[in-house]
Image (tube, rainbow, N blue to C red; front, top):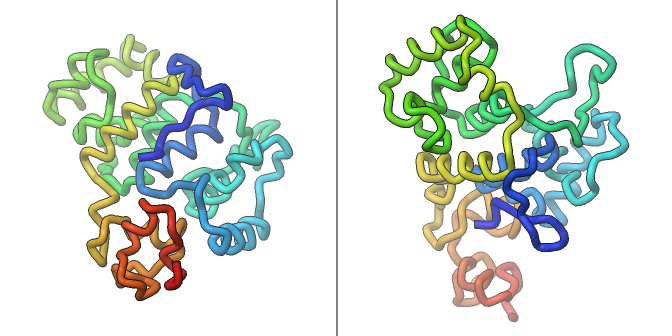
Amino acid sequence: RGVIRGYQDGSFKPDNALSREEFLQVDLGGICVACQSFSDEYKATLLATYSADPFPDTDINPDLLYCVAEGKTRDIVSGYAAGEDEGYFVPKQFISRAEATKVLVQTAGLTVSDSGGVWYASYIKSAQENHIFPTGRFNELDGATAAEFSKWFDADQAANGEFKQWIEGYISRAEFAMMASNLIAVKDCRTLDSDGEGLSDTEEDLIYNTDKYASDTDGGGVNDFDEVVRGTDPNVKSD
């Protein structure tokens, strides 16, 4: 589905920690926002908005700039609130499992109920209830009811337990890829397809610049999805 991309040498390096800028690319991909494949028209609109209040960082990977800009424009990410990095995105900083879970839950629009406690508690509980976490690490993540997990989570927090240490640690590329995949299984963005031709509304708006309410944008007799598969331009009737 194009959500996960490897390094330039073709490797994926699943055990590597995930940086904040890499994370955004995967996170947005989970909701059909392929930020490395935006149309030229959308790139121009996005940069015009982002440039009005950009992150001051000078080390954002150019290949991921549109991902960062999209994340900031959508209020998915923001600069640090205090300290020496106040206002900065810090793109190379690794992201914790707690931080990644919060942003993934917010991006997907999953229901979050305020349960009090540590700042990430409500997001972790929502992700567990929706089966977003990879399986096989904690039994309570895999099979507990929401009420059972909440009770176990609160006790683990009070005891500074193993789960607290794990969730506050850095997330690996493989772990977040699995979480994004689980999110797609729960809430598949491709099902939002107004014209029913196979391209999601988001892809039509941001990547192909086609009419999401018309299956054959250029009126050439071939629907937009088939044109994309064939490598022809769904906006040009003559091809």
